[in-house]
Length: 256
Picture (tube, helix red, strand yellow):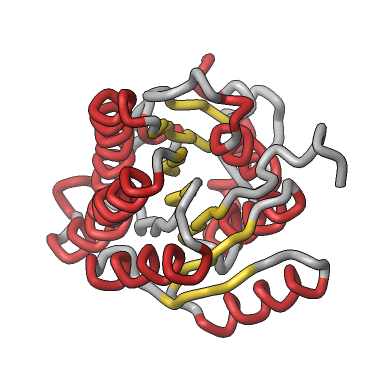
């Protein structure tokens, strides 16, 4: 692999939500770009399979099962990474969950807490422990997955919208606080992206797919790798003067 293409050569990266979708795509992209990766998610079978695939291609990859809503799990993942590889250079905080679409007044407390616990508090937990490791190691780069729902509102998804806006707020706050310590913090705002969760939703609600595609200026959904490529760039030294920003990877959705 040439130095010109290996944006993440020599870097140790942690990827959460790595068992499927954008997270799994990021694992493949990051390793192709030279990174050593630690994969974290709740599904051990998926992580084991993906780590094996990456190792078969010559990459260095490990995995730890973890629920990002549990601070002890997140601490354990970060501690494993530093113990195993000596440092943490990059983190892609991608774990998240969706929500059944309901009007706000019909959404119950349990649904609200679940979405906030994973999508917002999960990022909070990751930031706390990743930043501590990066301070000890001399700096690093963090990318948090928000959503176009963190930039604009859509109907019947209030907890999801609130959580994804919170991710952007946490990103900005951390970026300002740690810029002087060599730590960059950015967010991605993916638009409609093909994933298991999205495909399952469209299978149940075919009309939703047509509506989503009509709202996409390019007329299509993103492939997860297209989002993962943006995360890799933000984690790399090519983005050395980029911090506190939210990069919309949405095919122009938020331009409308």
